Amino acid sequence: MIASTGPGNVLTTVSEKDIPNVLIHEIIDGKPLYRKGYRDVLAKTKSIEDIMGSSSLQFFIVDYLLRIIYKSVSDEEYIVATNEAGLHLDKRNNLAGDILIFDQEIFTVDKITQHYANVPPKISIEIDLDIELEEFTEIDYITMKTKKLLAFGAEKVIWFLTASKKVMIAKPNNWQVYDWNKDVEILKGITCNVGAYLKEKGSEFA
View 1 (cartoon, helix red, strand yellow):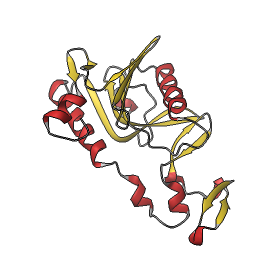
View 2 (cartoon, helix red, strand yellow):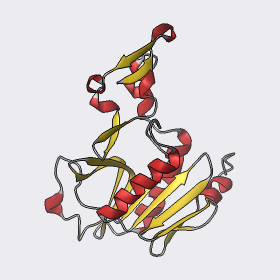
View 3 (cartoon, helix red, strand yellow):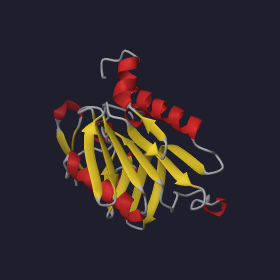
View 4 (cartoon, helix red, strand yellow):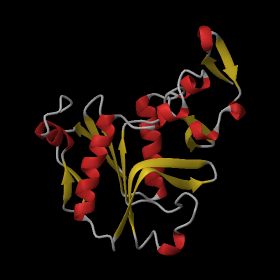
């Protein structure tokens, strides 16, 4: 059962089976992880559309990263997926990615379907968390999702965290955390620096 504050601040409970699937952001180890703000939707103080989008800071960073990636990678070598691209790891794990870069030698045309991708991305990039933290801390969730992606076959997982202005770069057996004003290699020869970019643009979040 999920507790939710309804109209008049009355605490009510909602069965998980009564929560719309659209409010599920990911499934990890068979457990649904709900979108940030889903309780407000259940309480009817917000609509589903109200909680679906990214903040302007988040999409500003996504735009910056995508500009670098699209300008630098060959569309014959890589496929770049965004907009909460879905990954089906197995029957108990479905993940969503902010930016996923797939090697076309692995993600071949015959693997393109109407379902989530079931092959690992070469690079996974995440900007902040999109789930409501209930049973996990932020670091617990980041660690769990990163381990799942690496075990699935991702070569590198990169997290940009706007609140702490940190970047975490995870490869198998090598995890590092830095301030986000450090140059980060996305792919060989392709780097970004979120902190420096925000400063250059005059953002207060640099």
